[in-house]
Length: 394
Image (cartoon, rainbow, N blue to C red; front, side, top):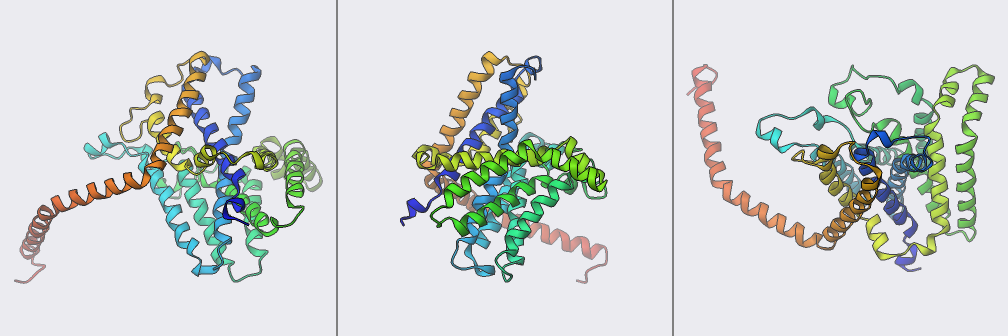
């Protein structure tokens, strides 16, 4: 079987769909005037529901792809070349998450704004990937079923215990660490419960990799994903209430009243089923490239919409002030612009990277002599101060 045939195009298509839904979702949610946010309006309600699917799909697919690449390597365990790449990728996402929240004007005034420490989707995905990698390494010498069992347990436990930790402040932790666990200070996403979706994506990936060569795999996978998804969407809440009535444990009743995690995972499974069904129609080159360029698209959208580095984004000037007649075509234009810029970047990525490297090297060479002189002056001054304080002999 050729490499192209082995590639899971439907996963790239799911990523492309999720990132496009994120673009229009962020644009409309950030700029639409509150007066038009009417839950009784059928079109707004449908948009709002599908907007809620986007993040669970994105986290789950991220875990799926990362785990799929990790376990398909012929070399397993600590020597797996994907381990090093995975660590770099996880740290890279966390780094980009902080980088996008830097305000250069604030830095010029010697100030780092509080928004810099808030946690967003890139931080959580990056940390989640490192979590999957940690589980993989800890179970690399165990039976094959241990790794997927751990991933499933992580997802299930984080979802079930959500009512317990949802309102916790984690004030005993330093604020920048607490931001990963609580939204009190303004974090958009937190590692709990969102790591659960990434872990469950990893579980699906293990099952997919293990049985994908079976002749009846896709019919079983499609029907299984669809049926389980529908059960989670329409019946899981009643199941938790039934468990609460039988056991008397109030935790399950709390899940019943706010069962968004399991319901959204049901939505994810239905989406998997639909994309697997249409897998033979999802090999369009542009669509696949979009799915492989989600990080570039995310960074570009963040800069344009939220004004990374300068604070001069669309959100600053048009926050919650635009009517549907403008925000809908604006969202379409926004999706097209971000996608086009990302595709152009990916097309010329090697050239751009090379030019940036050359420019950086020139600047380093230019300041190197001055830096050496500055270092010598600091060293000389430090010795003089230490001698004056009697901490250093002549």
